[in-house]
Each structure stands twice: as structure tokens, then as C-alpha cells.
Figure 1 (tube, rainbow, N blue to C red):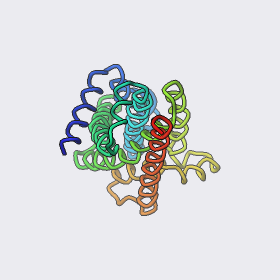
Figure 2: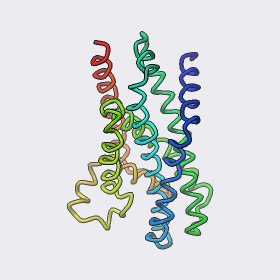
Figure 3: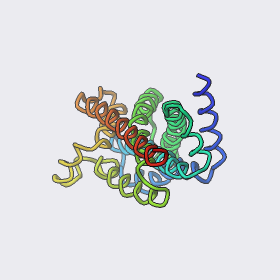
Figure 4: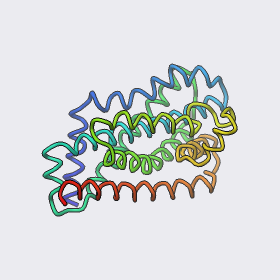
Length: 244
């Protein structure tokens, strides 16, 4: 526990000392919703679904840009090299990053919901907001491992470009920008195999007051295990390349 507490303190201190890095990550989804989501969604349940979609988009943004990019950059620092040379498993560091992702995801989702209220005059009751926040916390787990794997696979020079090349198409394919019924049939067929589509299905079910589809629950579990395995393989590959 002492190692975990130390990693938690280190992770939060490093992030809070770089507001130029995490503030835009939290603000951007709410800004994008204000510029496009609120105006294009109209009213009624479609507007609520749009807010839920941008809440998932906010969780993904935290995972990709706050953690994926930061890991790729941290790998080059002398402190990170020294830390990884120690005879310890990376699980405490990953757990600390996951806890930080949960905290910042809550902030990003809360800002999207506040923007929906202020800009779109969207009134979502407290119970629905609580369900959406709870689902987003769960979705932050696979999203964080997705971003962590990216951080160990990409270099610090290419990670931002690679993150955008994955993040933006995945958001579109998942129906987070365009509702799935409005997607072209070919795109919709691909969408059903993406993690972001199942993340969206979970969020839409939360605001609709119904159970998450069993297929989405199973898919998210498989994606979570897959991204964790990919993170472990990428970490082991990078460690072997550096230390033999």
C-alpha cells in the first residue's frame, strides 16, 4: 500500500503541476459539445443522447491525451528510466494512473453536463446524471488501458499524431459525433465492432434508464482484457528494449 500511495501522490502532483496539459483535455469536449453537439442534437431524448455521447468522448480524451501522451513523453525522462530499472512490477504505477483517470474523467464529464445545462438548456435529473457518471467511471478503465498501451507503443515524437489518428476515427465510428442510425450502412457495420460503439451503447442505456445491452457488456469486458494484455506486452517490449 505504501508503494501505491507514493505512486498516487507522484501521479497527481505531476499532473497538477502541468495545467497546460490537463486543462485543455478537460475543457475541449465541453467546448466541442457547445459548438456542435448542442446545436445539432435538437431537443428531447436526442439531446440527452448527444450529451451522453460527448461524456464518453471526454473519457476517451482523458485516456488518450492525458495518459497515452504523458506516458510516451515520460518514458524518455531520466526519472522514469531510473524508476523502471527498479525490481518492481508496474501495477502500482498503472493503478495510480487509473485512479487519476477516474478523477479527471469525472471532471470532464461533469463539465460536459454543465455545458449541456447552460448552453443547450438541457435538464437531466440527478438520478440520470448519477447513472451516466457511474457508467463513465467504468468506461474509463478500458479507455485508460487503451491510452496506456498507446503510450508504451508510440514514441514521444509521434504519439500526438498517432493518438489523433486513432482517437478521432474511433469517436466517429462509435457514433459519438453522429448517431448510429444516421451513419452510412457500411460504417454502421464497422461501428458495431469498435469499443467506442459499445461505450456509447452503455452511456445511452444509462441516460435512457435501461439495462446495458448484454452484447456491449461482453464486448467491453473483452476489450478491457485485450487492452490490458496489450499494455503488458507493450510495457514488456519497451522494458526489454531498454534494459535487456
